Length: 150
Image 1 (tube, rainbow, N blue to C red):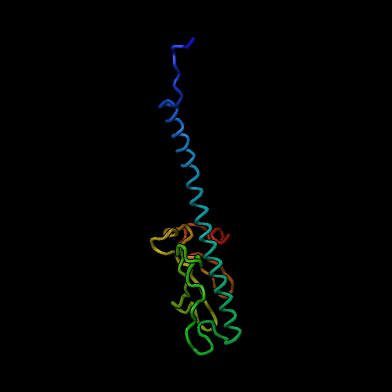
Image 2: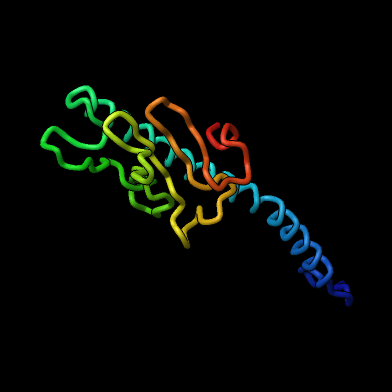
C-alpha cells in the first residue's frame, strides 16, 4: 500500500534565512581582516622598493661621492619608481625628496607616497620615508613609525 502523505524535500524559508545570516556574519568578520592583510602586503612592497632604491643610491655614492647625481652629473633616476613592482596595481609612488635639501650630495630621503584613489589612499601609515642613515619614518601617519615599518 502507498502512503497518501507525501513529504517534500527542500529547505524552508527560515532555514534559508538563517544560513544567509550566518554567512553575512562570517563575511563581516573576515573582510576587514582580509583588507588589513592586503594593505600590509602593499606596505611591504613599498618598504622593499625603498630599500632597493637605497642600495642603488649607496652604490652610486661609492662611485661618485654624491647621492643626487650620477657620474655624468645628471640627476639620479630611481630604478624602482613604484610599488608593487609587477605593475598590477600601483599603490605607492617612490621618489626622492629634494625639498629643503633633504636630498643632496651627502644626504638623501626616499619617500613612498600612497597613490591617490588607489588601495593605499588614506592608509594609517601615510608616506613611508628612508634616509641615508637608515632611519625609517612615516609622515602624515596615525600610527607610530616603528609600527608601520614592522
